[in-house]
Length: 275
Image (cartoon, rainbow, N blue to C red; front, side, top):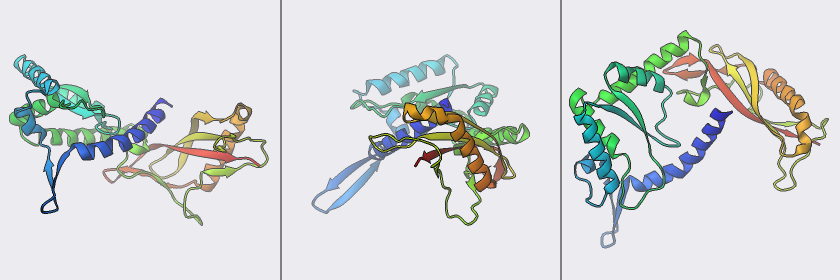
């Protein structure tokens, strides 16, 4: 359940941060005489070499990076926030970093920006040092290697991964249907919807999609009754949801990583409409 909630928060943050990032990544300068808009792309590496004198946050990060480097500490820094930077192969990446004598750290970048202050300068400075020492494509190669190790481990140990971590997400093989229907009519149950919003109860149904496309191991960590009246129908609605998916969507196109089918832990929200 915690992982599902985290994913929902990530989706919300993607919308909030992505729009802001578009405006933060470039300076738009309007030339009214010629009706031309000029885009200046922000160069993080160039900036940390000569930060603004008033950018105390960035300057502090740079000083910390220099101090760590002087003390023999080299760090692989992964910038991350809600919606970006999180790697499916993080544990494999940490092991590779350790093998190469590097520490691994996550630099959490927030959406709230203080005017004149720049986040992430520690990681940018460390990236420059790693690039100078190991080559400009060092981090890219390390990520690629970690992802390959992750895939080997997942296949070898038959580890199910969440469908959102796939390069190609699983999809139901539809027969005589155009889409996956997730709203079910259950007129035989005395369900009630909310007065405000007219919302019916729902359940987050999870199951494993095997590499061959079959489904198994159903479970649910989240029932949304909407009203206390509907709580008594929890077990019955779970059984209805499981039977519905098994009967109507028994075969799936498996999720894929690097064109290789993997076991996936998939989740659907099923909504139940009463009479």
